[in-house]
Image (cartoon, rainbow, N blue to C red; front, side):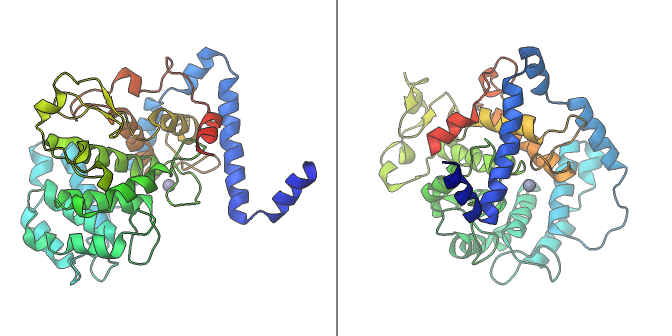
Length: 369
Ligand SMILES: [Zn+2]
């Protein structure tokens, strides 16, 4: 047996060896967690809010005051930050006319957008441009023109996910950008949503976190990029009673059901629909996430969180602001995906905490192997 194992080890590719190493590191953390007293487990599961705030505040001191050129990614971040801050001063600082002119200048002849003057054309640019225009209420037919065609014809892959640019492989971040952009321009039903769902459900691995691409290592930031794809698909499936078909088999079933929201919920508010994997509630559909959200929270808190503040990609990597943003956003997706609507607080069953049973990754492995 030993010789078979060592022969397998010798034949292993670099990618396989990296995967085993990461798995070992993650499972060691889970083993430690499983074998410590409940009080210590509760401490390990705590979100270190104060430490994260301190870490983020330190980052504010390092912001550069020099700007190279206007860029869609920074425009997206700045507009969303100002809207999050809110208030007259923050909101009135956004010049919508100039911003619209910038977006028009970034639009390429294919219908897609470029990230900056003479910059790369890809789905990130499409999403950030459409998202900013939408949230500022300056989205018009000129900005929308051919964006859907670009995403549909050039970026949809045989795998089911969406690529960053034509000819590339499906990728979690780009899939979120493509799907979200298609939703904002009301063209999501042109995508192969069944294929997309099929691709993304297999991206949650034995470590309980998500990978960004097929055969890649787990990474905390995909907690948001992949997790939010599920949230968007589930919202699409239920919002306002307008159903979007995930597959031909569902047509005429719940997916294309033209009955009103009220009819759907009559006497049926807590039944689980096997076909849709969702529970019909009053108003928006109340659904269990289509990924294992408790297991993902376990990965984020035990493997990505640094006790001294900040989050990292995976054990062994250093914390950074990017992964802190997207691990926390992923945690939010996990806890709010169950909610009936965006204003509802997370349900107790949606939150991994002292009262939750620890999710054993070996069970996940058995389920999926
Ligand atoms: Zn990452």
